[in-house]
Amino acid sequence: MTKPRAAGRACRQPFLQQFAPELPERRSWDDEREAAADRIIATVEEYAPGFAASVIARQIHSPLDLERKFGLVGGDSHCTAI
Image (cartoon, rainbow, N blue to C red; front, top):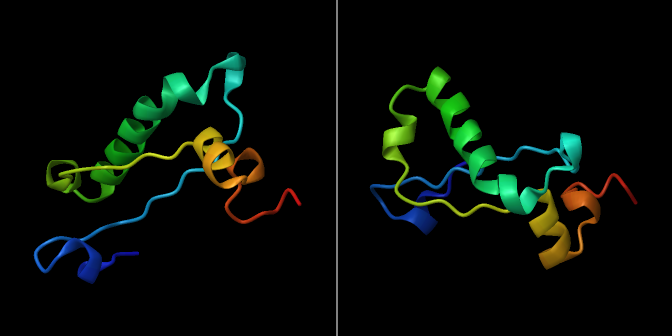
């Protein structure tokens, strides 16, 4: 999904979502947030060459961030845990 009006005429604002509420080996989303975003961008880059170079800013919300900020259990934006 893109929001051309929010990003301006020459820019697009994609929304990418990866859902994994818990990480293996008791790793913390606080420690893994940036690396996870890097992996998502690298995966999109495989299918859309040039994507990574076009990213000028990013805002990352891990499942833990979503739970902390918005009360979404496990960061589940679809509320399937309710």
